[in-house]
Amino acid sequence: MPRPAATVNALIGLLLVAAIVGGLFAVLQLDPWGEGQTVPSAEEIDPVLIGYEQTAEIAVPLREVRALAVGPDDRIYVAGDRAIRVFSADGVQQAAIPLRSEPRCLAVGGKEHAFPGRIYVGMQSHVEALDRDGKLIAGWKPLEKASLASIAAGDREVFVADAGNRLVWRFAPDGTPAGRIDGRSADSDQLGFIITSEHFDLAVGRDGLLYVVNPRRLRIEAYRPDGTMSGHWGKAGTRLADFDGCCNPAHFAILPDDRFVTAEKGRPVVKMYGADHAFECVVAGPQQMSSLPADLAADSRRRVLVLDAVKKYVRVFEAKADTESSGGDE
Image (tube, rainbow, N blue to C red; front, side):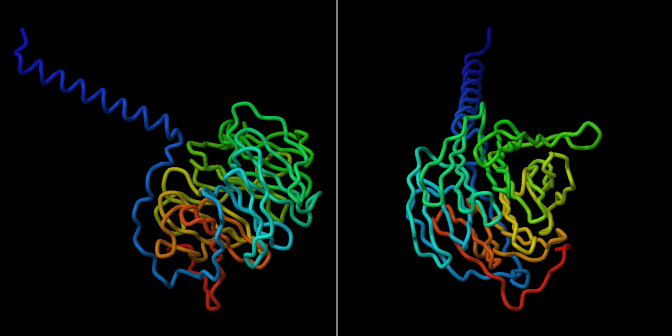
């Protein structure tokens, strides 16, 4: 027979294992994307590498902010709390638009869009289209097993990144399905979008290409309207010029001069890349950022807009007069 002490120790061991397994299960149930962890501390970045400075701060009267977009005339749109707040370019609130459910992503048709100023709001599994005054035009048909993460309005199409189904949906501006992009190809290394979190960002460039983050491959991929890949850029690594961690960048936006601004999970840094995709400088580092932004955007004046989910601000950054490229080897 086992000794009493050995039996007790065995029971204690089993209870500890059960507690650990139960705790892990609870965490996964409450946070299936694994996004609840705090951002690890990071060393401060050399100020010489920081090419931008904050020039304005727009307070957003919402309890939770989820998405950011810029429309015609550089109007700023922030979504959260079943509402959209609209601000002028200089931060004066102009409208408060109620929504029927919680928004997850947001886009506004630009001047070249079929309907300039039309607002597209991504909910959990469907898109709602509103006119420029915030009046509901239509709720599009829900998508099965969807988890909408990002939305972008091109000139003639609206693109929706679906993290649940790991693909990009194409729609006409009236919500008519126009196809999908799954990132796969039988005759190349295109293995599809590898996604393990809710971050799955996209944007339309001035060149007409659709740029999509492939998170686990730590790169941004470019697609033609027919879904074929045009190219990709980005490199995994720990250098400042690289994309670090498991799945980055978390957010990005394209400036009018074709440069890219990015934000990453795991290290509080917003970075600028040139039109040639070479690293240029830091927009904001740990000195300015304490957590991952909720979203990024850029306006026609090439200002970088950062949605601060902690302070509930849109933080406006502009290039310093003496900004110089730092090169891609930092």
